[in-house]
Image 1 (cartoon, rainbow over the protein chains, first blue to last red):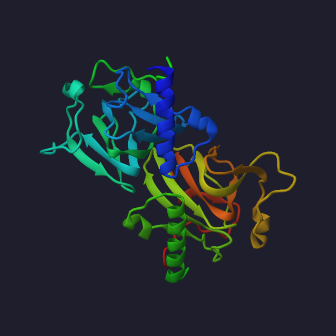
Image 2 (cartoon, chains in turn green, cyan):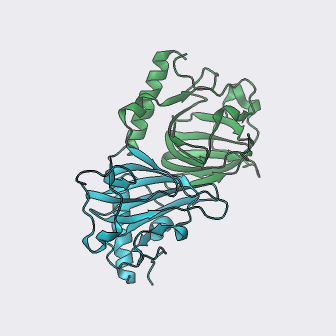
Image 3 (tube, rainbow over the protein chains, first blue to last red):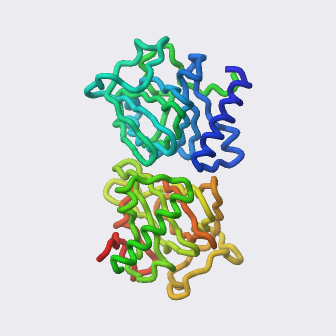
Length: 180
Length: 180
């Protein structure tokens, strides 16, 4: 991503957080992570996030999804002496559809990104509105999409090591994409 | 506490959370924990809290402090095979003063509750305003007080087992005080 694109996404995410009543320090706002996953279509697949704390024991983040922006299917495998990341998503503003392993919905509400469609394989649908939450167990496939007006989601979890995430789409590189 | 007092505190806490932009489900609002610690002066010493998730690995809560309400000095000791709770406090609205072990401030901004003064012994002051946070390591003494307009604080932590907390004040009983 170009530096200007990263900055634009950071500003947009900061506004979304502000509308949700979430206050960031100036330093945090300047360090909002813009994850385009190496796919170069951030508006379709990607995520904006702020990590408040990530120790060897627990982690807390805010996630921002632009309207219909999708974070692709992945799982959090065991690493080192950790059994893998469990994570609780709590919707703060907007609407998020979460898809996990289990009985597939007959028709899902999210729009699967057409260029990446083969890499979406789990379709058990959970809809989260503000105040609603769901916990995804370690090492299970999941993906999620913001609703028509996007979403702000708090993530509470065990230790997060994004670099170990396993994505269904083999093209994905999960690294911070800050202005490279 | 009388049931009516608990209800009044729950309603007041729900309003504080609403002003901070935090949405609760109706079920969550009805289950806000009102902790008077058996001291029977909730306005002076106590806390209102919502626990979103508390697994064997991680925990997330919202804490509400009424103006000048104080949560008394305590620490989170090791239990079972857990080394003790680490916790990150992030101020969302208002102002909170946090006191931990370390060099004492010459004059602290909080008002020590006079009837419980002997049980406050650590005075290293950290002031947290919205967007600011601080992590308290396991098994270290700490206490905190809401500012003149109270505070809403998010707490991210390792597993929480309140019943094992060790308070400096021997009169304290740390149990949920819902309408007993």
